[in-house]
Image (tube, rainbow, N blue to C red; front, side):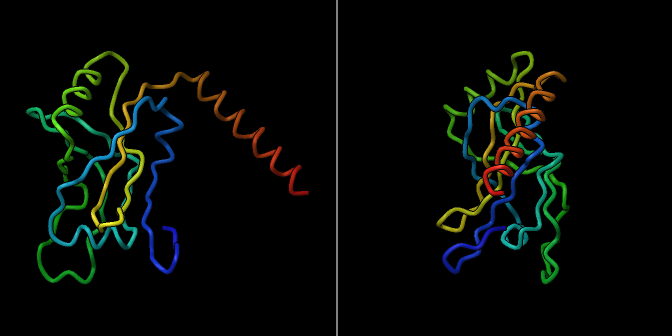
Length: 154
């Protein structure tokens, strides 16, 4: 969670997604939330590490996204890892569904944030899985960048 200009800006990232997948196209989707889930998100009590997206009856759903129960809630209890519907335009949904049916492609959530109007938004990406050698290249690149930054600041 980041603080900026006196406001708390919530930005929960899925770092594992960029390591495991090549992210091809990014989309921003709204989410259907219930009860006090938005308050938990604003408090930064969400986790995207095991989350993935799938289609059911032409609708896009995010699965296994953990949003902790809001502790001050008196009613409207919800399951922490329930499936949540994502809101996209029909054109985007058709394009994503066609691409996700191709071999090797999947849809992964990359970032959960609150926009300027106070709505919870989920950034999702059409992704293609990396092989072991691609992951080794990513690790090597990250290590060299870290070494370069160390040398610049010393």
